Length: 141
Length: 140
Image 1 (cartoon, each protein chain N blue to C red):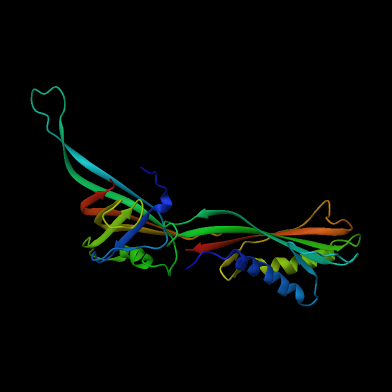
Image 2: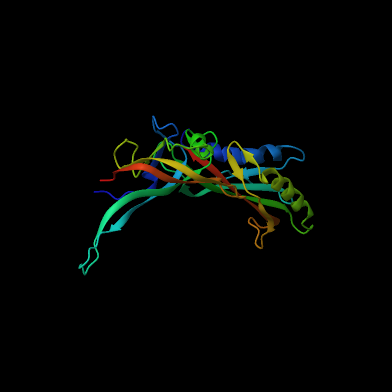
């Protein structure tokens, strides 16, 4: 029992995606605070993980206490513009299946939301969808 | 003086009543005590008079279910004790875990236990109890 290591939780969330997208067919994936210059008309993925509101779960202050730590991973999927959504949704399914209701290293992943097409792709020049994965970790002090 | 918050609380329990230990994973407790009254009004009185009589208590302890948490299993399963002689002891703390300080202690019986498992939520166990015998208050 120890305080949660948020970087370990982040690594669990993002490592799962990095491993999957290193497989066949491989896709570039970029995370927070990383420079990336996408190749025009290519497919690539952006993964942004953030922690949100936490809450007390049990009695006890710094010992014997439980906290709920919640977070959200936003995964932006970019595919070439003007050729329909199919290729994008194939990647979306691959990512969705990766997290859907799984429990990895104590991280509980909810059923993902999306892929949902965004009206204004950022960066422009791509067809963009977004998969949102809420997760939860129970900290045991 | 200091106002307390719930997370400072704790519950200690021992099914055999010999040595209370903290149950890990409790998230709330409540205790309600009642003193019965006896009417001692006499003929000729114009106002009723009472004296205090029997004191009893009952309450609830709620836990975040964790099968590996220290003390949980013994607490939850005490409801299955047959011919329960009310030998289990409880101490409910508003803050800290120092026996006899900021707490209420008593012997009692767990009268019901409810486990709740809901999709997307943490499993919760709720145990209700009644006190048996003396209730000792150390809430001052």
